[in-house]
Structures are given as structure tokens and as C-alpha cells.
Image (cartoon, rainbow, N blue to C red; front, side):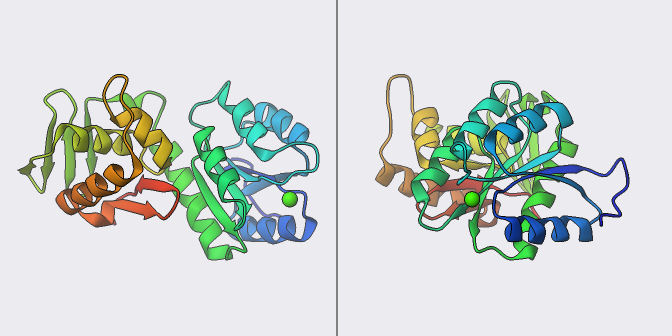
Length: 233
Ligand code: CA
């Protein structure tokens, strides 16, 4: 039984494994969130459009289609509905594929309830704080970090930070997608100049330098996957 209020955020739980679905539902109930379970991709695509959930928790191994298909379909009509994919550890390629298709975040099975709730909380905070278009604003602030997109000036606690052009583009991408895991592939395609694509080794070196300049705590490294800007504590 869920005691969630009718206006509590709705989480769409896409999971064909009944025991896992019950575990997830119990966790969401404990936080007063509303939830709806779908066991197939087809059901999930319809429910995502009809119920307008605030977050989708998406298992990638579904009986009728790959969960990535759900990400692709949802992204045809919504850029910002948070999608957190849930995958088994062996499905590294699927996880990255889902992020490249537009998922925000991922959880690896088996996951703890605390981890699950933390990810949902981050996703809900992101949608609550970012009315459509806000991410395209002229300035960005996160803890001690501020970015003035028009002048290109980056400050840390008011002090100007000098970044190389590529560091600047990487930081702007991460900031405009705060809370979202950006894959190596995404960063390589979007941060390098016209017609150029970087390589993974250079990306790692540049990210290490960038993290040193703006504070490593703001930019999480997801080994083998990519990077994410997190909200300052
Ligand atoms: Ca499954």
C-alpha cells in the first residue's frame, strides 16, 4: 500500500522482475512517492506519455524490446524527463548506449535502496530547479563555481579561473547537463572543434586538469563511462 499524496512526484518503474519491482516500490513508498510499474517496453512508452511521470527508472532487459528503445522513444517528445537506467554489471555497452540515447543516469544491479533513492532525489531536484530553458541561461552557479556564458569567465569563490578553450567547452557541457552522466563519446563529439573528434587519452588528461582547477568534488568520474557534474554540498 502506498500512502503517497495525490500530488507527490510520480516515478515510472519499468521492470519485468517482480521481486525487484516490489523492492523498488517499497523504497519509493517509504519516501511518499507515487509509482506505477510497467513490465514491458511497450507499456512503458505508453505510460510515459499518458501519465507524465517525473522520473523513469528503466530496466534495460525487458521481454519485448531493449530498454534503450524506451529511451529513444521518450526522447522524441521530451528532452528533460529524467531517465535512470538500471542494468546488470555485465551490460556495460548497453548502459553506455542508453546514456548516449539520452538517459540521465544509471544504477548497477544489485543496488542498495539508499543508492536508488539518492539517484531519484537528484533527478527530482533537477526537474524541480530547471524549468524548460533554464539550462540555456546566461550564467551558471554551483557552490563556489560560477560561469558567465556570455563573457566566458569562470570563477571559483570569486577568483577567475583560467581554462583552455577545450577545458572551457567541457565545463560548459557538464554544467548545462548538471546531474546527468555524459559519456566519453558524447564529450569527444561535442567538446572538440568543428570536424574534430578527440581521443579518450586526451580527454582523460584534460578532465584531470579541469577537475583540479574547478574542484574535483564537482565533477564525478564514472570509470569506463564518462563524467557528471554534481551539485555542490
Ligand atoms: Ca529485466
